[in-house]
Image (tube, rainbow, N blue to C red):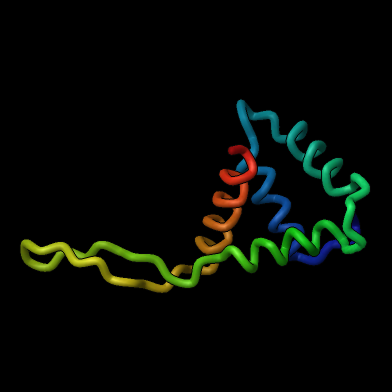
Length: 98
C-alpha cells in the first residue's frame, strides 16, 4: 500500500487500533490489508471509498453537559477533528459487528 496519502494511512492506523484484541496488532493489520485488497464489487478504490464513508459519518457537533450553579444544561458544542474521526470509526465498526 505504497500509494497512500497521509489521511488514508491515518485512517487505516486507527481502524487497526480499534480492532486490536489481546495485542494482536500485526494479525489485525494483515486482515485489514487483505480485506482492502480483496476484489470488491465496486470499481472504485476501496480505501478511498472507506475515507468517503468516514467523512459522511463524522459528527459536526455533540451535546455537552454544562453545570451552572445547581442546574445541568445540555449545550451543543463543536467536535474536534480527531474526535470526529474516532467517533465515525467506532460507529462504523459497531454497526458492522452487529
